[in-house]
Image 1 (cartoon, helix red, strand yellow):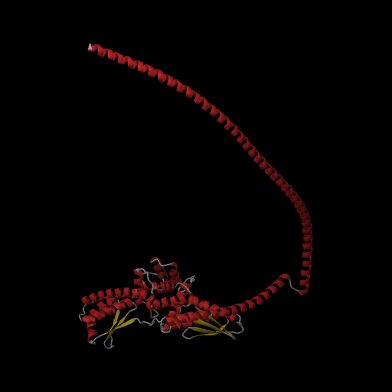
Image 2 (tube, rainbow, N blue to C red):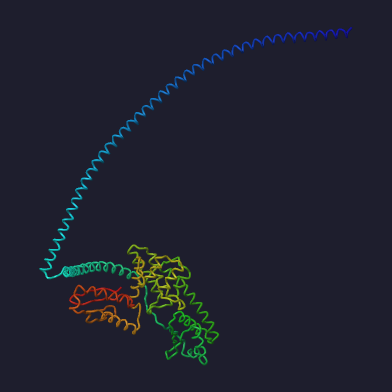
Length: 516
């Protein structure tokens, strides 16, 4: 019974669900159909609205396009009109230019015709003038009794004499004014530089004197059978002169470095007291080391004293060797320092590079520091050394030109040459042997007497001036300055001398020139 009830309830439940589902399906279907109809109506309405809007926009775009086309057409027409007007204007200008050119061509043709006519007239006039000149020349030759060539030579000679006379007067005036001004300015600068430069310039000799404690020491220096003195002379290359001079030994030699080594070694031997060949060799070796050290110190002292820095160590050593070199008895290192000071002082007066001038002045005689194993003049050797140690072109040129071997191209070179001459020409700075002094005086007089028109000549003032008396019928007042200049040039070319030589030519007036 219960089972049947359950089944019935289940069946009824199923039937109920089925009926409910069917009823729901019918309701959903009706709702969907209604929604579809509504959507279709909405779509139709949207399509209709879209068609209406598109038609309106289409009409608007067509109107805008038409307006744009009208605008572009107007612009094109306007531009076309402007271009047409420009073309017409250019055409008018071209037409006007063509007309102008036609008129100018016609004018040029007329002028050319007139020119041809004038040229023909000129040719005729030239022919007539040439015939007239020929007749006049023939008439002049007949009247003067001279040919045209003879008359031309006579005229040229007259003009040449007149021009020569006037040019000589002009040259004399210009030279006088230039010399007065230049000498005044140069003397002021040199005098100021010399006054401010207080370098010593004592002449040195070729001998050194070593004091002895007693004359008994002379025997010990000579040694048994002279072996000590021979050893010392062999090791140093210096002659020892042991004579009657009390308590002194003289060292003689032309190499100051060797002489200094011998002096130091001998003094050490005298102090030590043990004098024999082995000891002499030891002392000479020590003396050589001391001299080498002294050379370096002297070079460094020279650079410090002049304020010239940045030199190569080998250049400083070469400068130190100049301490033991002499020129006409003058110490070359002292001379180089003095030239450096003088060059710097004169450069300061002229507004030139002072340091460059001092550097060139200090190194100008660097070639004198080398030994005989290097060939060439001290100028050539100095130039090679300066190039080797990378000195500037200005310094190299100053070394090259300080004796006039080449023409000075810079102010520094001129200043170094002048300072070198001033330092060498100072009284007492140098000495000459009697033989060379007499030879220089004789050569001076020979040079002067070799000129035509010279009557007498005299070398005076220790060869620093030569006075030449000329024949008045051979040399006039205008030729006297030329003779003085030519003699001074010959002296510069053929003689070597410190300082300058004054050349005075005497006639009715005196013409003065200097061989610098």
